[in-house]
Image (cartoon, rainbow, N blue to C red; front, side, top):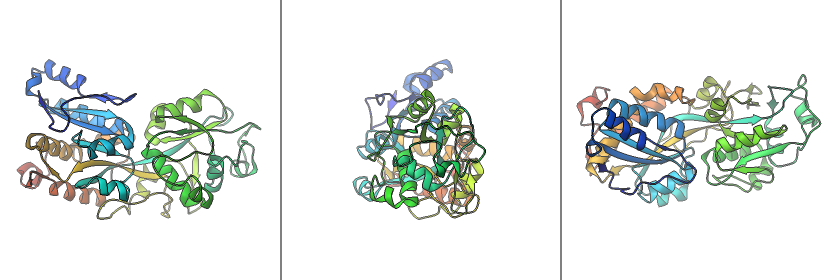
Length: 365
């Protein structure tokens, strides 16, 4: 088996999903390929639902390449690519200035638009509308009962119980937390000066879970609970999500259209852009992007060429899987810039995509 120069010893993150190593190699064997014929790429980080779909479909189409993707969260993905133990990392939040300094030579490339959904458990109602002030006050532990006037005012027909609110949140380094904390800091001065921003914050109240699935399970466990998760996880679990009032006074659910609208202006040179609390009409206010982390110049020839071919395929023929995984494709203008970024990536200083006939023609290998 041809194994990446970065990570000859494969392992899974604690509690994480591992994709395409076992399934991919079994499929390769069933299709006539031997393990020695398979080029193995290793990735780690967030957004398992999307990257695992890409990995599985790419291997089905090109059995000579298998992708092992370890679901260890944004913080784990950043750490893994910085330490060069994987071929690519993924994160649901752009690198900070300090992370960028430590990750010299790494390029962060947006792959899809994501959102944070507010999930809740109120047996008497399946709809809930929250203002930014009310949502921040709940997360700060200042609004503690469901029939509080700030909640009742925006839900006049809902049967809100006189019951305690219990918050469920994520623990550890989480891109989902980073997006949500950034939003709260924008709409609440008290949150900004208190818990603040980052992939891990000191939550004033709540029940901690390491994963989106864990937060959903905690919310489902008892009435009166509320939490935040990646929208894709909420859709897969089919749990109620709240509508959040945006800066235009519209209560918006995290629909594909409302998420895409928030990302239309996301064009910067390094893709480090905030999408939360957009002032665009019709935008859902808690939006971010999921990023791929890869070295601008990849040192290993075989793995580098295989990786860049996989990425080109993902941004072209693999785009239909973005919606299948409950994410939102990049807006057209941003997608065009990403394609230019991919063409500039090199392997041992040499261009791979810009020089290949299939890339020039917008095709896949």
